[in-house]
Length: 254
Image 1 (tube, rainbow, N blue to C red):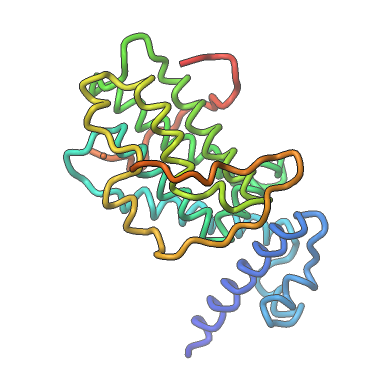
Image 2 (cartoon, rainbow, N blue to C red):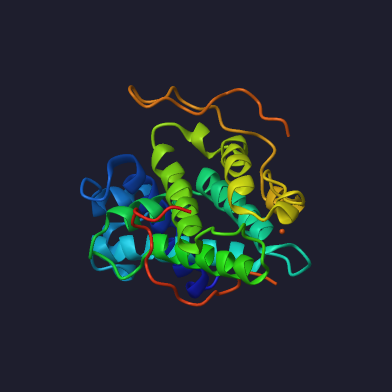
């Protein structure tokens, strides 16, 4: 193994160790000593890559952004509608959140960071959602009177909210939970002709990344009921959509 490969492996191990500690203890309580120990390297090796904990956090968020961009870039080009693409991409995001601690920690840091880092994973996700909703409007796939910003707000708030709820119960990140959301939302926002062809549980691309086994969830936190365990009965793309203004604030209905 070359020196460059060893350095890349060490950096990746440090990022994963930091993500696990940030998720478990929060940013403030995680220490550089714990991060280096979790990666199986010395404190000196950590400082070869990162000078401060803030730099480590920025690396975690950047790695999470890359994972999200990879998911967007893998969205197949084809005849799927923008609303189906949005549904599929949200399912892939939830899979990333369920199985990748770096993505979970990246969203946590992005939601809580304030001005600590220049990376904004929530804004990145919102930009993709905004681009797909705008495309749906161009396709005349939204029902009359439906607000694009209202749809963006609901989708972003729900998906990021699932990431927050999953900190105490990973069952919030099942496909069943997200499918239930889309079964309620799509008939409300989609033109009836479009809605009839949409699959709220996602198409084959969305399910392709789902691992065969599901995690055994812990009991829900007190005062915060988990999702229903009752089984539910059972797509030109969002690649680098244009920048959008931040519209996560409440106050506009769809």
